[in-house]
Length: 173
Length: 337
Image (cartoon, rainbow over the protein chains, first blue to last red):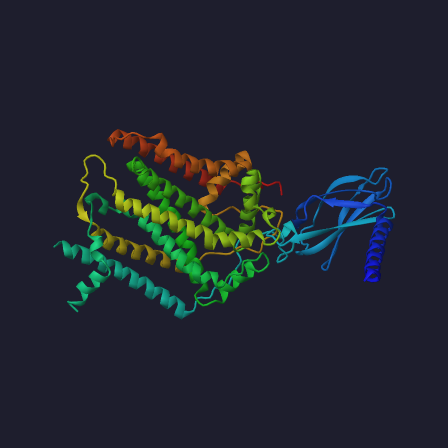
């Protein structure tokens, strides 16, 4: 019993050391923080961080199943610290992504959810030159049956109204 | 047959309709509220069918509206009738409000009736607005962008109407949910209060008019006739003037103007920017709500009615002038897109 407990303790300790070691080796304290955990495409996103190089340019990329989308870059100070805002491009499909920041030899990332919003309209090319204020020419479905039914409803309503008025004036007499 | 009618009358408690109302209320302006209700009912019935065809997602909305117009049986007619009914309801409620204001019918003890009416006007305004966004065409997208811009200016109060409220559902889907659930429920609740108070406080009469002299039954009959004609007119309009659909939206630009009930706001936005939207619309409803608190006099003198007629005419003139200015003005961007 004591042997099992010792083994479990040793396993947990080893696991803890492994995780701590991996974290320390992974980014030399490189970390980024996002102002929001979810944004819509077209929105701006605040990012701050530290430990990404030393006076290097820090580049940001949005990575997800839908692809990689460059977000721009910023110049960090001698400790690799920075605060900036980037624009999540229009046309980025909704889904789970991670923002990857690279500065010098250091990398850090944070998860980001890009939400489907009306700002994300991939149905049309996202080019202002394609924006149109007029109406789509549509082949309206107006079968003879539909127009006939609508016409019949119209006539029935008109006659019903007249009958109601007549019934009212008849009662007066 | 002769026995069936009294039996049916008993079972439907139609004798409840034989209460006395002022003889003056058989005139046309007293039916404007009922015409508003008719428009709402037509929009509700057609809306139930349209909801079966519509996909409330930013990517699927436009396509589902195209399908409704081009392929769904009665889809184009139902959609056109839905929109014309909404137009008619807004027009009728504007005229109803003017008539009630002119008559001074908002004064004690009818303040709550008035406030319920102002609440319904707000509901109709929001129903029209949310409906505009649903096709997700250029006009709908720009309406949505204005909604977000105005909501952001309201700070915490407007958070619910922005995409930041939750990442789990698109704003378009949430506005659709409001359009088909919360707003109609609120409207029905306010309508119930409004009608209950009209029934038990009675129809307002002014000096020189009789409090009674007619039964509600002929009013109801005439109401049915006008509602039937009103609906027939809407069906005819839907056949002759079908409702259009814009192109799929392109984000980041402003190239359209809103439907006619909102055009007057565009004129103000052209002068004072998008911030005016968040100020002017709430201010208008606050002014309307304050009417019974400001005018607390009891007299129904013709002089008072002339004053109110002047104010109402001024209000309509401002609405029409601003609408015309906005319609004729070149398209301008308000959101710094």
